Length: 217
Image 1 (cartoon, rainbow, N blue to C red):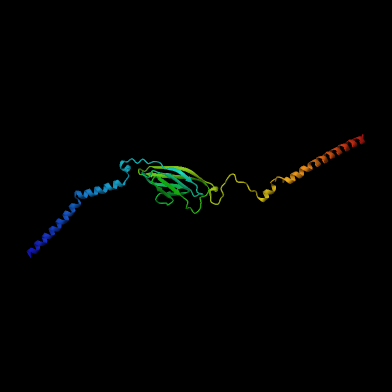
Image 2 (image 1 turned 180 degrees about the vertical axis):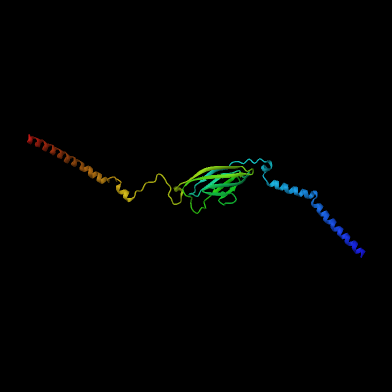
């Protein structure tokens, strides 16, 4: 009986010792090192400029605009290394990189493509704004105006130069036409006769006038 009680006390002490050693292992330098390693990994995930408190972000640019039948495609650049986000405000819409499929980026180059619009945008002048925000909270932007005209819409023939104008039948009736060569020759051949008749008529009138005056005298 006494031997059984002694064995139970030894087992209890062994269990307490095991729990104590386990608790000490968690608080040991090895555990602290693990916490420091986790903190170090978190810092490595952040840009170096945050650690140095010197995130100098360059302003975005707008480099190329293609009207594309009033479904514009616009391209430019931005500081991808020091930018938290990139967004574009255009046509009463806000396009955010990583959220809207219309806005994409490869490296420092961004592209806003509206080629998949169901309908082209209405003609008019649109403000186009590219905005970025740095890790330090600073914001930079680039702005321009994109003008869409009716001639850029599909189905509207473009205005060209050097194309002959084709009048309507009503307009054709009012346009003077040159005489055919045969008609010109006929009229030229009649010209001496017309001159002779006109001269005779003038001479007749002159003679009649002289005789009338002499008769009255």
